[in-house]
Length: 63
Image 1 (spheres, rainbow, N blue to C red):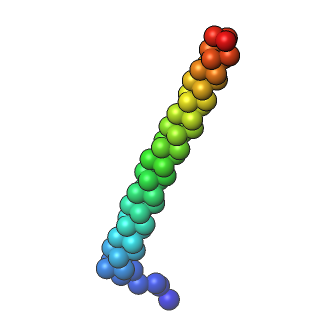
Image 2: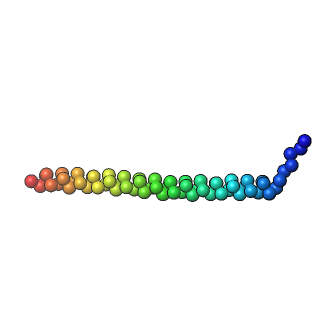
Image 3: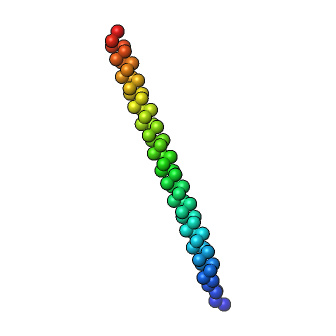
């Protein structure tokens, strides 16, 4: 017995797959934004630490 192909089911499946792809893409974009922010925070913290150490060194040397 041959299987009957229903084109409306194929269209519905394609739509579900496309929507899932869009959701995954949106998640990946959000993840990239989050990662960029986290990296920026770490860079800022490192820069502040360097400035603090330089300021501390200058303060000790000026005594």
